[in-house]
Length: 196
Image (cartoon, one colour):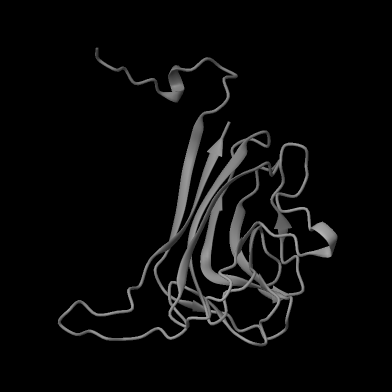
C-alpha cells in the first residue's frame, strides 16, 4: 500500500500541531566558563538560537544536545532561557520557559535546592577527561510575536573549584598520532520549532 503525504496546507483551518518553521544553531567551537562565584550562572556564548513566532498563540518546541565537560561532575545545573539580559550572575539571567499554565519549566526546588531545567551529576567521576551529553525537549508557550532568542546556561555550586566546558574535556588533550588522535571535538545544538 502506498503512503500519501499530507502537507500542512492540506489540514483544515484551526487544526493544531503544524510545524510552521524550524531554526537551528550548531555550536562547533569550545566554551569554558569564567565565573568563579559559587551558585551563580553563566550563559554559553555561541549556543543560542532565534525564532520569531507568527502568532502569539503558537508554541516553541525546544530541543537541545550539549556536550558538557568538567573537572568535577557533581550537580552541574542546566538552564534554558528566553532572551537573556546578562551573561553571568546570580540568576535568573533571562526569561524562564513556561508551560501552558504559565508556570516555569524547571524542577520544584524541593527543600531549597536549585530549580533547573536539567542536571548532570556523575558522582565520583572526577576524571578530568570526562565529557557527557545532556539533551532534552521542552514546549515553551511564549505568547509573543517578537523575535525570541533561546540560550543555554550552567548553574553550579562549585564554580570556585572548577570550570564547566562545552564540546571539550577539562584536559582537552591533543594527540594527533597515526591511531586517530584525541580528544574528539563534538558539536552541540539547539533546535527551535514553531508549533501551531
